[in-house]
Figure: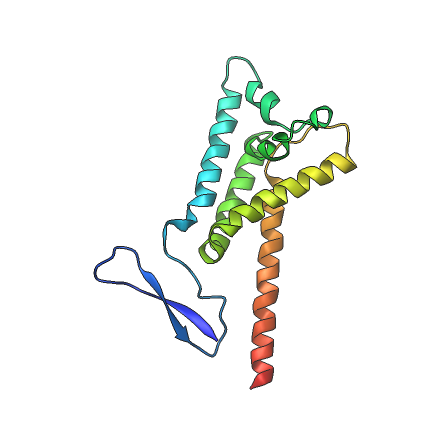
Length: 171
């Protein structure tokens, strides 16, 4: 089984990964200490900026009216994604931000840019499910993306457990 170990180089500021052979599993040490963990930080900052721009604008809810998902405006396809930049209140915003940082950054350290794709796909899936199940209310917030992180993290834990069980059975 290949496992990655972080080794600092004298010529470079960021450590690089070197493949090593181990007998304990491959997933839990594949952390990439590079600048590829910026996806969740940038997304969180954009969400905070949109929230405060919307709450402090002179005309109330200008940004919200332009970006939130509304069932009557289903033909405006951009709304299926842009609703994740808006939040209903402070608790909704910071609850999502905390989970994005706690789980999203850890997933991003292993899976790099794919985590942002998982987040957007989860948000898109949540919006599509909402548009089918509830045809009368609007939608704001990144909760669909946050729940996709829970699902991805649970899947990663299950895969690691299966790897360890298979390794134990082969000994």
